[in-house]
Length: 140
Image (tube, rainbow, N blue to C red; front, side):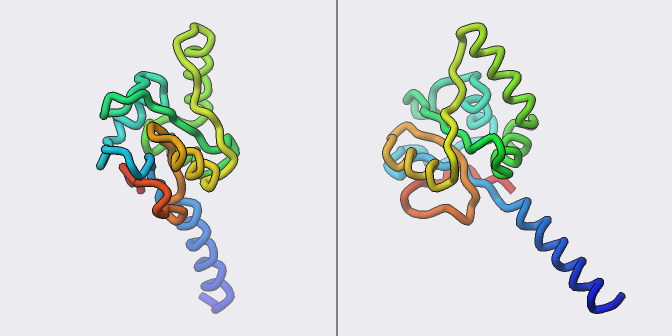
């Protein structure tokens, strides 16, 4: 294999790794929650429950529909693709049984919302994690 081909393969592997960056589910840093299971998070983001494990009413926020982190979050945590999630929410909204998570434009917007909301829950790239939010679940 030539040096050029090795460089191309290395670049493709780096891109694939970046595309599969870790995702973290985050809550307000003052939240009593230390951790959550994927099932608990899935229930909130699929409209099956409106409460956090602490009993507080959850205020979930989504990433933009076009964000790669959103597709990765839903496939890893709920086992569904975003189109399936959208269809499920359409049924819930139509039947009056739920309101989908508010959509944010970026991980920075998600962090800002959660930092200002004690019952906020969302997800961001692990690389964006800082002290303004607390991670309760890491998804590889």
